[in-house]
Length: 81
Image (cartoon, rainbow, N blue to C red; front, top):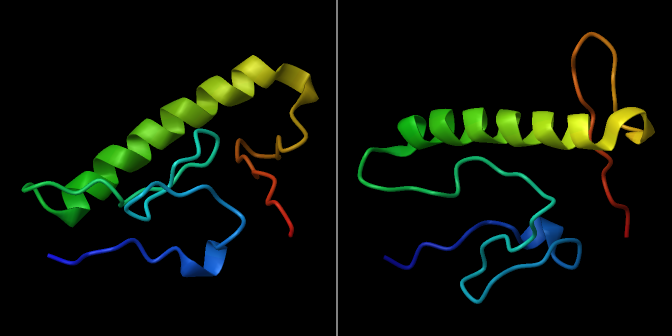
């Protein structure tokens, strides 16, 4: 179809695969994995998966995680060029 991921603004900050999709295990995006069930279904599924994965990362990192926020929210560190 000619579809490509619109990750140009992140050029140089993230690793991409040969097709231009994210190839970085420590960065989470939703909405990049589409199939015949449709975009909203996949974003819902992906967002739940990301929430579980982030929960595991926070628990694994323990109190050393600098990004632990208040009120149950997590703020992830953003790399600066």
